[in-house]
Length: 620
Image 1 (cartoon, rainbow, N blue to C red):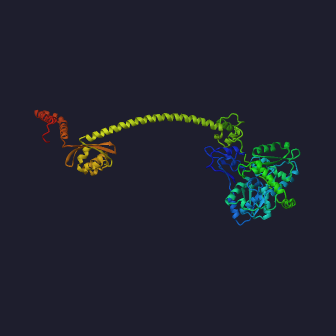
Image 2: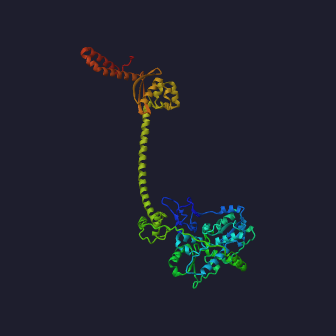
Image 3: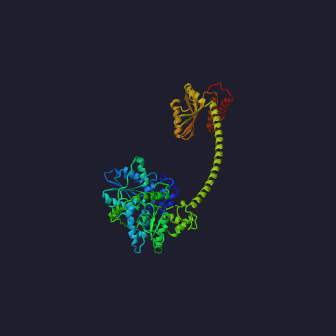
């Protein structure tokens, strides 16, 4: 089960989590913009949770299941880690927070310090009967998880005993019955996985909440110290097990000798030491000849389930102050009776090989990654990517756990290249902008010329004596001149006063059927019509229709055949056409007609000259 996850909506790829993760259980895939916890590799230390600047990393919330258990008909017990004394500095007396926990609905509240007393005695018994095998304490679940996943060769060196928390769970089951619901409260996130270290599934913890979650429950239920009386933990009461939150506290609880001269155990704490310590234990234990007491955090008082920004030595002094107060009038004989009562319960466990080490990729692939990121000295590194050396980082990239962009040098190099490319692009854009401005200026001039030309053409069209109109493919008028309106009559002129040029008017409503049909035929057939005589309002008109835009627009010219200028021109044109058409025929029969043909030609030419001279008094 994954007890830690990353909220991808909040993740901004700061790489803080990658840098802090001791086992590199966080991957960042290529083409992704967020990190991801790899559950099977995670040891639950919570370092990533503590350092994320955007609070994008969350651990599994156990408050809801706790509330459900408390609402049920089952009897419930809270087993509380003694580091609570270092957490609630704002509460004046530990008996107040005991009562606050009861107010949540717990039937019993027991402290894990008694379970620590039991386990510390078991440690002492095992270590004093030395048979040539050196041990590593198993009180810290994160250390156990680390060894199972990354140092499985040391599994047989783990003391085969459950943690003080699980020991307390076994004790309260014996005390209150197997049906009791057990909620552990402490500073450790990995405790939420504690059940996997219990072989007998009858020994169980039903839910595990951190002190941070406990505070949230107090706020939700409006529980505060000022409203409550004192209440002490339920028996059995712990003795020096109250020192468990401090790394060597479990040794002092059992009075195991840790004297530098003749002691046989070494205590080490902190994530920066665990890898080195376990390596030395594996390689040099026959030389060191000591048992190891290991804690991943700097004591439980600095666990990730504690409130943020706590100070180790302040919390440590609060724990020792709390222990002194507890031991001042402590009934040691009563405590010994309880120890004798529970010491022989089964606290044994065994650990399993969960090897998560990934085989190192071929050297060629590693060198290829180093070449990409521009690194030649693979044994050194800036550690900005979260890996100790460039080679370790290249191995992680090769394994698919990291991506090259995590390398600061590579990222800066790409950034400079990007800036150079961006600068070049900006220069090109600037030049393009200038070209666009010039093009826009030219286009504006052309537009002004076009507008001027259009106005000129429109003026000319309005002054033409012939009627002129432009229509669309639906026979709607786009533009017309005054002569066209005048040809249509008074009704059209009245409309023109409201809608200049009759724009948008339907030609069907303005012209006779036989005429607008001609327009329709021209549009549909894309064929021009020339010099068609038509009658409109008792006027003989000469109509020419021509295509402007194929299947879209057409124009037409109407000429009033009764107009003197048109009559004269039309007669000349038509007589000329007659002469042109018959000239060849006349020439062919000239030999037959002789002088008569010559006279006919002279007569026609005289008619043309007559009209050219301007004598148009006679009607045609």
